[in-house]
Image (cartoon, rainbow over all chains, first blue to last red; front, top):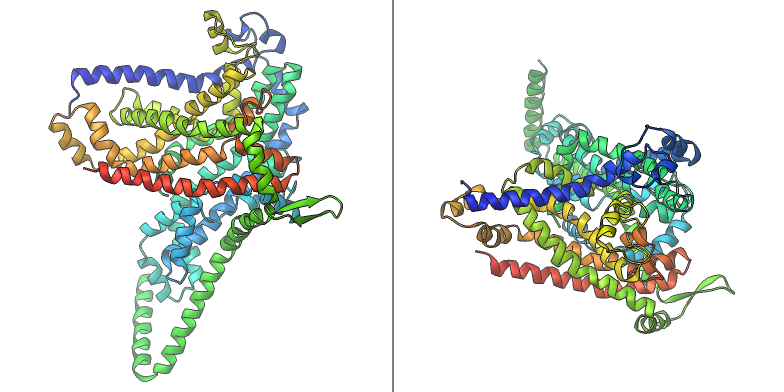
Length: 279
Length: 330
């Protein structure tokens, strides 16, 4: 099991290359964070890009929060994330549970469809989706929009299907003998046991919805979420050259995700891997 | 106490069941039937919402795209009219003749080699070295996960900042050496696509590596260890043992990479707005532009054309890659 000297040298060279890549991933954020504390005037002084701020100012953060409607965007993003994630997890759990634990006629058909659907590119049907969204009054409708995230088949289905499969059926049988209904068994016996997978899926989907740019950009353009609003700010700031304000907005967008990631790092990483393998 | 009560109840129920089976078979049957019906109702109710959602947002939408591609909006009647293959005729003609379409087609196709022959191999090698316990491997693993959790808007933005012609730190370094494309890195026709590819590789390696490393770490340790006892080198270990064993994951990533040809446009939009003068557009980019401008029928036609080409192509590639795996296998 011991590495030879030659292999050790290679590992150290790789470590060096990895460090460069890691720095390239982190540096933009640290740089933006530092520069978000500068005033626009200071930012454009010669060589200021490489320097720490002379004095820390929260002016940029204040301005973003007050002038640019960021608070509303924040509220919308949180609303979409919470409701969308809840719907998605519930629908996935319902579909995955029944397909996994019950035998019925279309079971295999549903399972194969769920797997193949994942690899079909969806940009092709964008025009009809757009028409549908307009016709059923979803367009610019923040209240109804989370329905778009509610799909019960896909990543969530596969993740939960695999998890339900690993849960033994004996508890359910005992409950049935005690006279529990199918629904009670699902809600009281199986769901509590699947909690780890449900939380993991919730966190992963939550991050995805929080980050989603294209959906809200396309279907609720007047109700800007953080991701859409941030992209808008890029264009506004280009004219005004108020870059530090933009950095502040970017930091505000990233921080919630980073906090969730730091808290649930292990759960997120393990389950992304588990779900990514299928298909 | 509770446990005992339940036990007693179970025994009681069991006795009643036995009694029923022997003396009142018809009652058991009706009880059983009721149970079956209840079960069916339950299955139906549980699947009702997910399947309705799927039927509307997948099946209906795709069928409607097909229908839309045979129609055209008539401004006089204010309704869609059936025009047969007219849309297909004009779209194929435009694809072959218009400069803008040709550029978009080439740009889209270039994502195939970039994701599959640059990003994927680099990710495999990196995942292998993470597995071989590079110093600080655990820290790297967490950092490399960042592109998977941070919004594409933020990622593209920070990438742009680095190369900004006025204040970008990376740009200022390159400027010192004398590399300084006219109009900035994203404003120059020659550099804009390479920059987008660079972004995709930069963000893509992190994403793939996490999945690949997960696949490698789940492999049976005995096989790898016994090979190492035989004194196998790093290169052979990677190509002869690891890669064949994680081939299913590689296939999946290859397929995802191939679908990028048909779906990618956000990167181009966020990094360069499709510019300068349309030189960084892709096919999917044009589809979204058409939809946003209200031209649904042309968008549907292009979408359909590429679904007809794309889905069989992706299926074929999937089969092909799986085959290679079968032949390589030890």
